[in-house]
Image 1 (spheres, rainbow, N blue to C red):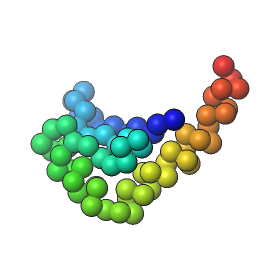
Image 2: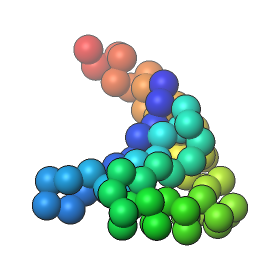
Image 3: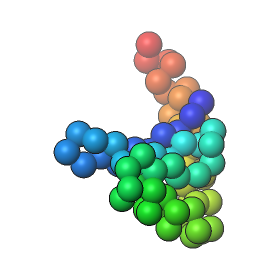
Image 4: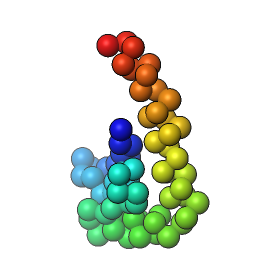
Length: 67
């Protein structure tokens, strides 16, 4: 299971957090600046890593049962 959070502007992805990578990655100049800023904030980064357990792992069994 992987948690991914992407940010878009005008249909262009500029940042992405992936739980398998464990940090933000920027795809545009603006996105790279944001990713660097967010990756320096240890509390925000750990909160994003915890989203996998808080959101994905709690809901995966519900999704599988409904299929």
